Image (cartoon, rainbow, N blue to C red):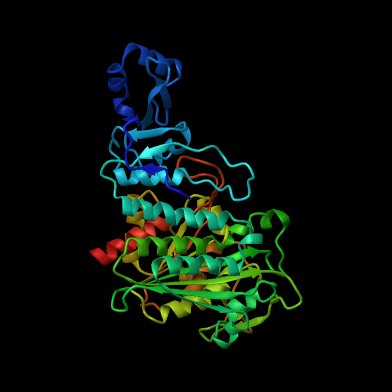
Length: 458
């Protein structure tokens, strides 16, 4: 997606960003004609009010957007869709950083039109906000846009092979190393869970492994759930539950976005990205309820439910990722409906075995307006994962605490001495809001990136 920014334009029209407490004072400074226009347009000075106002010739002479008293990044994102075509410049960014303003406008400009014969009209062009960190803003907007594109693409065109191809393109762009283990090679390389979940599909499962950076730099490992479509397997989902399962690889796309930001901004880390990519399908060789399947760690898992497949593929990848003892390891997954029931669609659930890492993630989430909420790794529920025939069961037959038991399952594959964070997320915007159009979303990606940056630079 091309960024909506231009270097400069002498004909650019100004956009006034007015904090709500200053609205009345600003309005008094305007000409009588402009005040009349704004009042007749229904502007009362509440946050979110927007209007284009004319000059003496009747043509647009500028625009105004009213911001909250304490604006956040998304408040400026509305300009990407409410400004008419033409070239505009921000008169100032009020109390918002120029880089945040650029990120919000850039992300607000994202549109998914791959399958539309008739594309939408060209949007506005914005002069780069003065003082914006262009490299950083570009890295963030391009990375999040990549994730949104991947998540929103229908599964017919975004299977395990296509997801791997996207990772390979990313590796080529940043001169990273990448390997992809495909099909029965997963058994030879000891990724039995990835193979078991994905073998029923005609589209072979695979393990994507990208590395970048100096070996001597702090190791940071990212793991993303790459279920490119989830039927539920033999524990088949109902139609309503299956409808938007193209987004079940949202964790993988989010981790690719974080990796893209890290590499574009050249953070001094040794980065590793692991994505188990599968399609959870139904066929004669599909794994079954109460099957017992081995894992890369060597422990056995009784399959309590084939629709709890995300944790199965993640456990192999997490065990491999932890083997190098990274300074931090993060996984992202559209893992449970229970997390959405608890926190809704906008707030990813954070589970973490390290208080320092958790505190940093939460603080950075607040700083960059990418919020999350910490949930407990309550060991009292570990008993619910007990199995009478295997070392562990992947899905306890209880109706409560599903997000916690899923996280506890993953924790079995992460040593206590590896700082680890697990995000259970929606990865989707159900409605369009400023800066966040309806469609795929890389929730927590900016917070994770900011945390990595803070840890390596502090």
